[in-house]
Image (tube, rainbow, N blue to C red; front, top):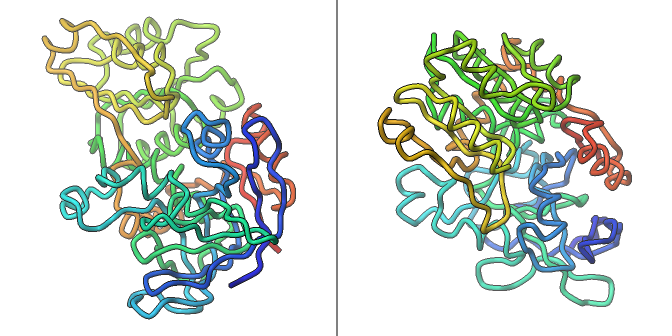
Length: 368
């Protein structure tokens, strides 16, 4: 076992507590990673506050990047010393995984949210030997070390800066993938992104990469809208001051080709659907609590062949898409590092506070 320092969620209404824990040695199919950096994602906050119920006490974290220290005997394509970005976990054998659609793995929830291995065992124990839930997204990377698997470990070149690569595992991959993989936005098309956080701004950058003719960003925060303009949005709408539907349709009377909701807010989802043009598509990317409902005009959706669909992890295969995003960043076409603000791991609660208040777009925790 490896002694580690981890941020433990003990109660939904309490700050994360830094605790010394023991992490299992890697099993035959597992990889031990020493963390260099980990992104802070809204999904972590949702799990912490039980918007998506996870067992507690638990170590969260699902945007980890680090250096491989050891591998199990069945691991073939990852070796000690490799630099890896960790992403979501999947089974590899269900119909979705076999169809290269692993973000819709039939076991997605058990393998990413249940806090245990598939056999029910935990990977972590506290100093007294009591189990602590881990294996969140196949990693639980709010810790100095994590266990992952070949399926959710993406080997990257050793000259890639792991400090900025960490959020590629989920948030940046999700926003960019929604544009480039799920909706397959084409040159000359129009895109409206609702929500200019890290996911939404990644979508804005991706829309610029593929050559969308019109890119619109909608948000409450004027500073984020200013950044969206710098990153490629030709039009921005401050939702608190303007009616987004009226503003979009005034600029594009026929409606838009693609709308992407990054908020999970039912009212905003309804706005995203309302601005769709004929054969337009709305991607729901933002997470919402189970039971959340929205309404849509059936005639509007049906008569124009409009599509409403959910998108998980950008429909992306991390092993191919993360290297693609790294290449775009190196070419100066996808400057996602502009979203990042660094924090020492010991300031994890401050990082979450700044994320929730909007003071930071994409906090990234750094380990010594």
